[in-house]
Length: 353
Ligand code: NAD
Ligand code: TYD
Image (tube, rainbow, N blue to C red):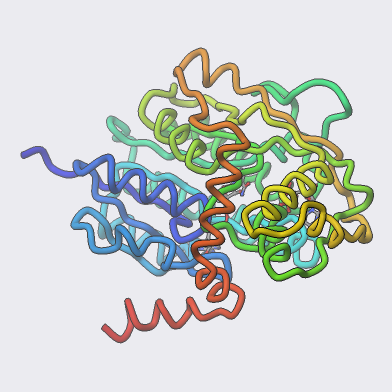
């Protein structure tokens, strides 16, 4: 039997990372998947309960800002591929604490690049460093147009500035040292296991609990939403079939004004919860706008669709219904992440065992 390839996925206990880990563990028995995660507030091993006992899966608790730790890990395990998702990911938190975003998103990425460069040592056949990024690096759009792979970078938040910087380092390591890299820039994701600080899970949680629904400003800002499992299939497609040294934009061609999205969600949940139509909309509360709030994001994913044949599997209506159904069926998950009980899960699964 051919030797298993060793793939390191960073940030695999987070929202998108857990979907990517699940996909790779289930679809590629020929790979051994190492999930490296620090388990910050956003990382939750309960997200991966269904695959944690698979023979081709190993969890590693580690911090990507620890350069020596990364060098040792890469030396010990000799990864063939890296899919890098670990990051601080919430714009509002980046406004309160930009330095944390520099440390994890910029320094952490450079540490991983250095470790890969050291162990691959110019022998790049069969090796790949895949960096997962965001469309927010391109800045904001007005009413018209979409981001393409050649749109100039113009980040506006500390979060997007840190992601833009990390993208530049990945590109620079390709050009300077020849490390085989790929980068993808994706639009806003939604789906199961999403921490309830981001718009969609926060609104679902608050509608369930009849709490106010805080809409920033007038709710006129536009985001382009993609179902998280479709992001995972796009990463799989690009990892295996994309061209080295290239960037791919990923999006669902699915733009919504925040206020329209929140109202749509209210109607869907009123129906699911057997509430009177219009009941949840009464919870909408307009609050002070986010500082530097980008007006509109929209992704042109034509390159990925035409060159690599990827397309989303669900419409927004289908994806959102699946998402709401998951949250309604997994209220204990929400309760655990909001109470921090998942930290105890780690202790019982990985420390006291
Ligand atoms: P998330 O916040 O849910 O998960 C991030 C994960 O990284 C967590 O498990 C956390 O514990 C881990 N982590 C944080 N700091 C770490 C460190 N120093 N060392 C090791 N692990 C650490 O984020 P997400 O929404 O799943 O996003 C994943 C990636 O995708 C990020 O790079 C983000 O920029 C990118 N992205 C996100 C979206 C989106 O809509 N959420 C869209 C496009 C791109
Ligand atoms: P968010 O989910 O934080 O993603 P991002 O800022 O990375 O796009 O926010 C999505 C949009 O929803 C954004 O325009 C800000 C807005 N928003 C609200 O109106 N209320 C909220 O409580 C949150 C978290 C976001």
